[in-house]
Length: 195
Length: 370
Image 1: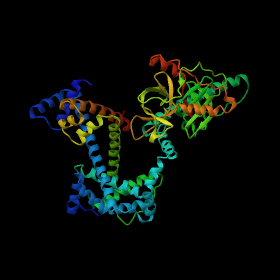
Image 2: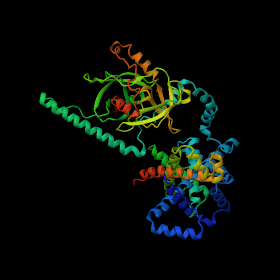
Image 3: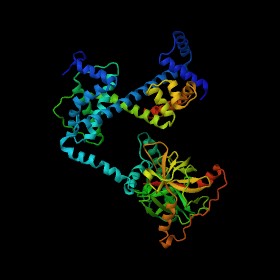
Image 4: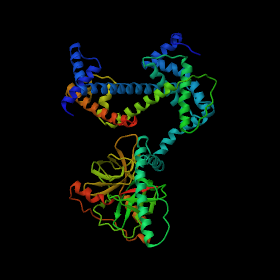
């Protein structure tokens, strides 16, 4: 089963584009179409409904990372891809508990190790950034989130955080950013073993 | 942070995000070519901004996924698996009741014991090396001591070499409450230990015995077994009355092999979930700080550091010092410990912090377990 990107069903292409832009409708559709299948796999292999939720959501994050990577080529149906990634992710979890067997439900799967390995690194980085953000304290945390995540303007931020003008808010923001960078890189270097 | 550095960072950010006009861009690019520091900053900042951006995107996606999941489950599009459905339904139904029950003391204690684990040393991914290094060092020390003992024995008698060295790891912190060698620490620090020893501020190991342990209140009293041990009178006292909110406090402990000082303030008179056994302190604590004294500015012990909340930064709980009095009272029911006496007044009340810490340091011990 090798379906090239251009032979992908139009619907699936639209779904992936929707996912890449964090579109709620698209995510809901993917959920409705494929969640049951993944839950079946996890439950058949000693997992709970909660595990199924975790694994499925992580598989969607992997798909998202691929969809936003710029060189995305999905060589199979979305269904097969999600099944394969979920399968791989669950197998990793089982391995961590020193169990290596996994019985497949009736779906086919392809090799996705490259994608899940890349995801593992991204997930590690996500964790490092999360930790760094959570340890800079307030008002830095909210200030940086407002600017870099919620993309609010400096004027708006100055008003919301009680700075007398946008320049003050900007200076504070850069000070916070420098601290965040320091926290992040200190850990990043330890984790990646070159510090 | 110098103003110039901030300006430079701002410029770099405008460069990366393409907000520069063509002239400024050219100027900046030539600066980048001639100045390796600027170039390095651009590379580093580009990487960091990508990380930050990705983090934000992924976080948004994860929130969206959680939201969709909850929504679809509520609408019945997602149904839990058949065979396990019953259990899950039951759990969901009783979750509310369980949550109410959780506020009752017994279960609060359970919740705290979960928290506690975070201040008792755990082998974290990137600390494994450090930790094993520590063990090696301690092992070596032990070997050296054993060798000395063997030598001594060989001189006096002809006894064969002693038992193999015990490998200790850091358990937590403890502090003297009586100059005859009685120390208080947290019960969870020593709970599963086969062997316990304490190490003083100068790195000297001393053997101890557990003379009192109350797991429910998480307090233990140890006694240094060396009969020759005798400390000078304690500089600090143990306070019976509760401390006041916002009162500045400090602690000494062994999150690593060397003593570490930390300061903060009393944040609340109760602990996790309103627990009345403990109080809440805003202070930086790490695994190994457990069992350390929390002192106020007069040099009175107001609590024993016990746990930190893993879901928030700088939220630490300490067992209130009045429970040390309770533990002592229990212990003194045994006539062997009748003479145990805690200092009534702090002798370091009017000293500055550096002097206070200097005096206290000799009375705070690293508790090692194996």
